[in-house]
Length: 396
Image 1 (cartoon, rainbow, N blue to C red):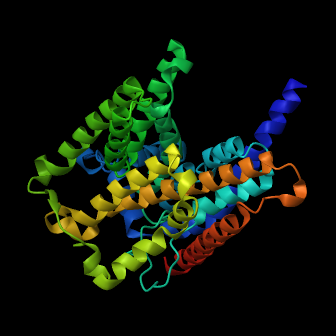
Image 2: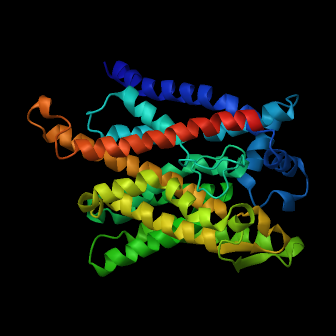
Image 3: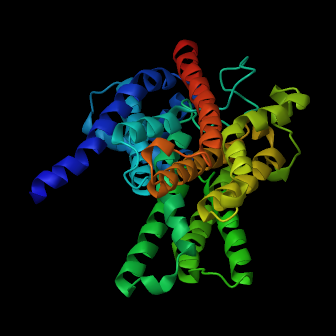
């Protein structure tokens, strides 16, 4: 009986993983033809450590596959590496949605929501460039190091929520496990790409400081040893690798909309920003009283605000500024914001269903209009993501 129950529980995850591979394989088989993938492949196989020390996780994964498939082509190696990082992304999303839905939604619906979150993009009005520049795009197929970061975003964010959990509920071994897991994922995510870490750490500290002043729960040990200390150490090392030695003269500078204004008319930038966050913004506005008390949603908004400021105001100093490396911070944070907003809506819907006394009233007059409206906007993001998916297939 126990074995049967375990098999039944793991089956949805296997199905979801298979669907994810089927969905992503066609688009990634085209995206690996991008200049970014080819450049990072060359960095990975180059014996000069300087060329791959800044993004070691993707490069080392390429080298592992080269060892496993010595006769494999570059395309096969890159596709295997890309799918290794991209295919598992829906799994922790599904696990979390399943947990908070309180069995009020069937697994197939939660799977579709997870896949929708993986593929959704900004609601696009202007699509004259294949990279959707000017938007904060939660899914980017052509950048290998951002792809390497994606499987860590949801687990890292969910672990960060434990910073605000009451510590007395944990024993010492559980606390040590949480700190160790947080530190490990913090290090791995930063080695994949530091973009999210440079927004998450300030965002976590801001929310923790606010809660501390309000005399609310803050797990200082987890904050310091699970996030801040490992994150700062790895970020410091990556900074030295990126901006010293052979890269002397490079650095970080301020430049208001400098990169985006190079590619997008300035008047369009605020519009495209709004279109990038239409779903989470509408969720917060329509559910304001509930949202203000929701730690996951508020943390995600604070981290996104930090990320947006970095993306819009910070640039590389030197000739490389046009590549817009700091834009990736906004891209990573908006994905987490979408996930947090979808989680909040599912939680509200499930609580409403659970508390209803008559199934004929579901989902209830208190929720139905707001729920339908935000899910309509969610659907527009998903449809834009489908369009971006096929545009990527056709343009690379």
